[in-house]
Amino acid sequence: MKKIVRTLAVVLVLGVVFVSCSKDDEDGNGPVVVEKSNLLGKYKVTEAVVATAIDSNGDGVSSNDLLKEGYNACTYDNLVEITEINFIYRMQGKACDATETDQINTYVISEDKKTITVSKDGKVIETLKSVELDKNSKGQSEMYFSKYDTTLKQDVFFTLQKI
Figure 1: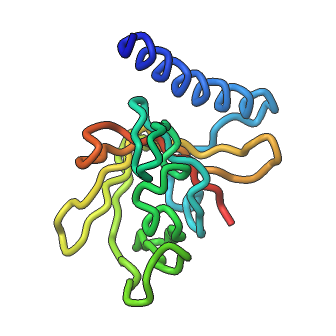
Figure 2 (figure 1 turned 60 degrees about the vertical axis):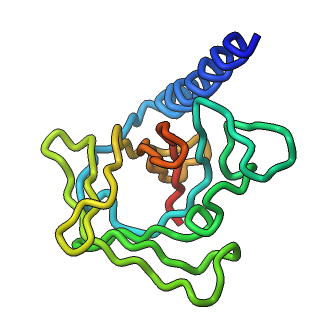
């Protein structure tokens, strides 16, 4: 039974990702090329989902929605600001304590424009995979990507909305 539930969860998560992408493409505009000029700005996390559900908030109910579970709340509650040089985590969310400070990193976009490598002091700290830029059904710019979470031991699929 657990295998069936997990399989259905994976299908559901992947289905939501594919449906939301195809819905956005119906407006005829399609995805935008991932390059610095299109990335610049501030973003907020609007979605963070995983294929294998977790129970991070201890309520006895597992979910694929990491925001609902409160997983990594301080990080996901903050803003991401992308400048010409820096990839900055603005630690100003409500879930963080007052001692948190902004995390200022550099980044490189891969030649195929599908991967962003984020580094601190020359050391890679994370890799954003399958990066896409598009507009949602309301015409708002969004960034989509996945990255591997070493604690959860699985990819997290993100949607960030430009603000």
